[in-house]
Length: 46
Image 1 (cartoon, helix red, strand yellow):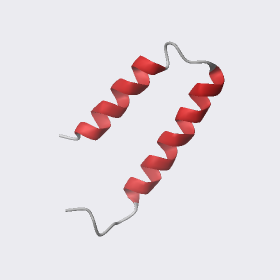
Image 2 (cartoon, rainbow, N blue to C red):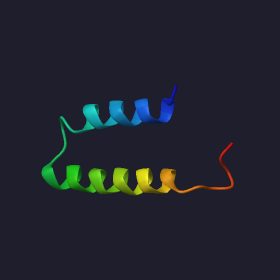
Image 3 (cartoon, rainbow, N blue to C red):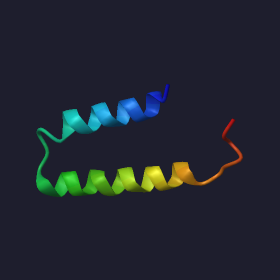
């Protein structure tokens, strides 16, 4: 179970209801960065 992903989806759905378009854009960029980082193999992963 990917708790991080669930948390991300929950946060998105909660936050986007009350955010401005600019804030949504910033969050989308942040999420894309996080997702691309997660796809890279890292030595800290199990």
